[in-house]
Length: 165
Image (cartoon, rainbow, N blue to C red; front, side, top):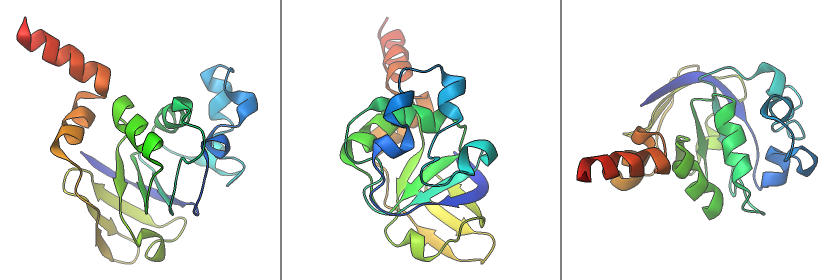
């Protein structure tokens, strides 16, 4: 699983309510997507492209455990999220819906907003193509990689159920 795209860099301590505002949670997807992360960067919802890579600091997705935050990030069609650290609930939700995420302490020191990044989700290798700097993310447990490859928890469970039939 590879991702290559523009880096959208965000800071530390971004709660789920800043990913999807509370007044948006019952709106249809097209409306929600017009506002994803807009309080952090008003340009993001209008300009994010499929394959782009979101880089954040510590505690991304903290606060409430709303799964809609991870789902909204996946709906933007980003290639992956690389964070110095995730809130545990967001981390779990990401894998359960098939959203590629990696933890890489120190990443924010080595990327700038707008850099072009390449990420190998399976190996955890991250290359800043703009500067040539390479980083190594924490290894993702094999079970979670299998879940990502299946497209999330439900597709993985359906596949496993089919194998047992």
